[in-house]
Length: 66
Image 1 (cartoon, one colour):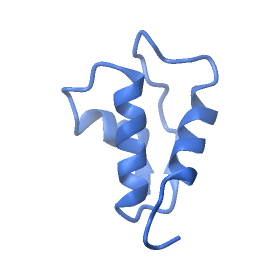
Image 2 (cartoon, helix red, strand yellow; image 1 turned 135 degrees about the vertical axis):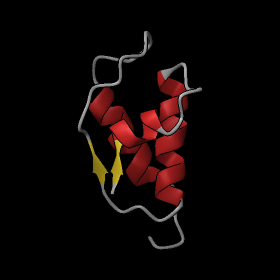
Image 3 (tube, one colour; image 1 turned 135 degrees about the horizontal axis):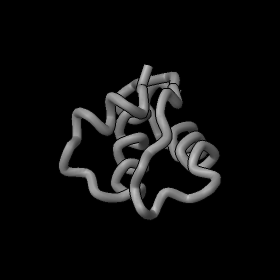
């Protein structure tokens, strides 16, 4: 399970929502099958519908297991 908090904490160099989106895509490509929204990302560019954006990115990512 990919948790938003874990992705943010384990990548302190991230400065934008776009970078988080890339980490979410990479987690899906690495074989994660669930995405858990345990915190709201506090980047200045976080969109209002951030959950939908991350969910779309996660489930649209190409993965060998899908």
